[in-house]
Image 1 (cartoon, helix red, strand yellow):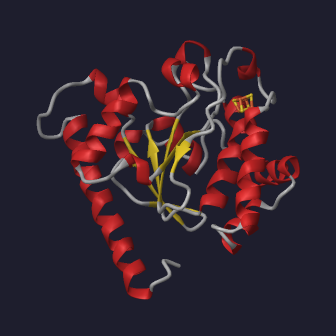
Image 2 (cartoon, rainbow, N blue to C red):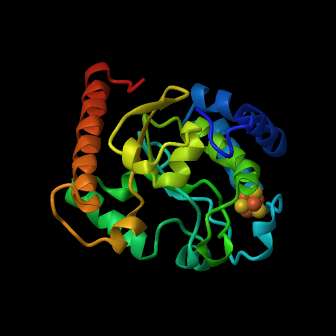
Image 3 (cartoon, rainbow, N blue to C red):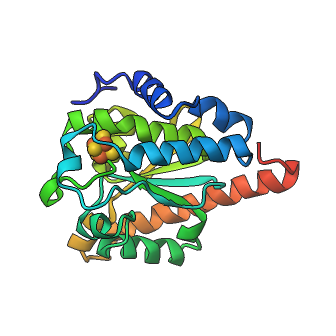
Length: 237
Ligand code: SF4
């Protein structure tokens, strides 16, 4: 599948990041997630992101938003890009949409603190516009390096932009949400972006909120299944 950004060679992006931060992110992620080498690779990646000026978004940002949360986690969320509140605080999903996401997950028994949350682009696009394919291509390598280091079991794509970016598809989020896909051995689960839910308050059957509630329950079930596997084999591998 390919979209407007489908000509992007994502492996090249990761290789470039690896050169920038001086580590092989994928290998470190597979070898020793909790070791000193892993921590050094993660810190180097974070430093590279924090000082990045690879695309024009660096000129208008207040803060780079690397992402935050647990790093030893089966669950990562990825959105489109920082908004006004996120840009001001340097943290992902802390505005109204982020607060709604926290409440929805919490109602489904999922704690945001137990997950890592980030975006495709790490700097705010002016006026919250959708990042351009060029900006996502420049920044996407950082996300890939994060995922290769974190090695989650599940990646939830919040909204159309991150879903299209990860799956290289032109299909709309309404057709993709609630379904499971694969990205390099990580299960990808698209859901509506919480800012979309803020714009539609209906809770009727089939409404975005109703569908999201179904998705959160499916996500909870999948997490429970992984939790059971971890308890059974004692490794989580
Ligand atoms: S959006 Fe990404 S690529 Fe662009 S300046 Fe920020 S960190 Fe660098």
